[in-house]
Amino acid sequence: MKKLAIALLGGTALAPAGAMAGELNLICSADVVVCEKLVGAFQGAHDGTTVNMVRLSSGEAYAKIRAEGRNPQTDLWWGGTGDPHLQAAADGLTEEYKSPMLDQLYPWAVKQAEVSGYRTVGVYSGALGWGYNKDIFASKGITPPACWKDLLDPALKGEIEIADPNSSGTAYTALATLVQLMGEDEAFAYLKELNNNVAQYTKSGSAPVKAAARGETGLGIVFQHDAVSQAVEGFPIVVGSPCEGTGYEIGSMSMVLGGPNPDEAKVFYDWVLTPEVQELMPEAGSFQIPSNASAKVPDEAPDLGSIKLIDYDFATYGSSDRRKELLARWDAEIGGRAAE
Image (cartoon, rainbow, N blue to C red; front, side, top):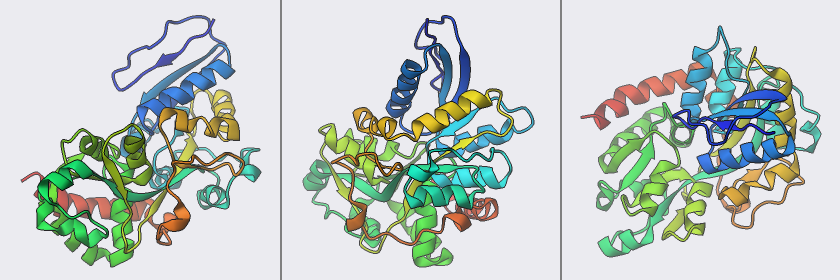
């Protein structure tokens, strides 16, 4: 019999227990529907394995793994932006592992592994941008933004949501992107001005565009594939890509150093890098670029070739020191103002 125990923030079991042949403790930093899809598929392919899964944003996942450092409870961390994965690697929290699947991956996914000393690997990619509710914009006479600077339009006051970069890898990517585009002081000056238009800093990176889809806000700054997901579901969301250029994520996967079930972790690690598994993602409403070069790119996925991408410096902005510096400055100059 199979056992599938999926802990979703509240630790609720979604299926009854039975006999087990192995166990895997997984943190998933993608949308919960994607997480459930992966776990269900793995369970079906590996009869008798218990998967204990918790869904956490990238920043929360890093914090949990760091807190468990002396007594690791997690085996594998899948998904979420690459920067906190690189920080975990730099902090010695994750295990070096060279998957036999590496030679099937795109160069950008392999480079992520090389930069980290093979302590993480790229599993998908997607560009930063936004999604706006065209009905709200039309009803309020707001001009749709084409550039980062357009988000400062006073007409957008209270109409923008973005996540908190402490908890969200999406928002940290936005922070690091703006610093690389503008320079640090100019980026923080921009963020202070943008703060005038921000209604809420969310915990989850995809939450802002979901709020826009529901009509609760006008625009969410997110990865473009998260905006595509809402549009595909039929919501009046239009995807935007900033004219000045934008950053992108390399969603990553890491094996936790000293995790209790390393054999099961390696099985999942290799399995999830196969094209067949990566092609399951659109079924869960996920439209990133898969890292396996043989996997079919979803038709709905944003075309990275048509987006003005910056040369995002993953090594620098994924480093522990740089990440801590930027987050501390954000807390002092933006987070404090947001709470006023």
